[in-house]
Length: 374
Image (cartoon, rainbow, N blue to C red; front, side, top):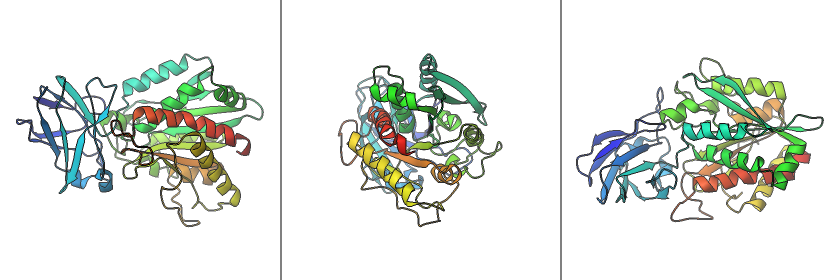
């Protein structure tokens, strides 16, 4: 029996793995920070054996409420990820399963590999309506890819969508793939109409270094990119800086930043209500978008989410807040659960990569409904 994690997005430290019923593990911290919660590893040589794996340092993870009601995912083909028996007590997370194959992969959520990212970029750039623009590079030297979809023209809106500032939130890039897949579907009338009236600038992965390293929340230097938007620099956050530089060139009429939330078992949107100068018109646009998304996709809801910031108190280092403050546009953060969706549960798959893709695709319906108001 062997446990390994030396691969794309892998993260685990093996303390003991001699007894399949008493495997002891720890999650490795993000390089240069104290954040940790993402795990991804392969268990091999345990086919047909009952395995009990205990992550001993779960009690020090970044979001302890993330373990309440949570189930890890496992896959034997790295395509289909099912929930497995998981429990949390006394600071330890216990995972239990009996593999049906010689190797099984276990993760915090369905991983989105850099290989899949490259395949997504390759598939999209084959469409004549798409331009691939490498707008910068990470601290580890990886490309920051922007996909420009549509032809600029008089009166067209400029829409920016980013995903996966926090690399462990892999559902965000799954959602970006779903959105792109639909946007490039010649047979989709919503996509065709949108591309006649708008140009999309999409960054499917804002944090390639953290994604590859198996980080939860930070880049190669241990910097949380979603606290850098008012001070982005080449030294600490080149990923944000190059995106902001490109935005200054294009302007921004609409901004959506896609994420995952560890604790809340809901899909929801956080707005920029606490930004100085927030108006009734801003509120109407935000409420309108959320209402339209709820109408088009029952997995989305508006009852549960983050507390709204008091007027004028918003943290301008956060992408959504900075974008509304700086570009005076409709700016929002889409959050998806690591757990199941409490309002539309699925006991086998929970909230999944596939459902994330569908919610990403549904953004096009809401954008189209609100486009004339942007």
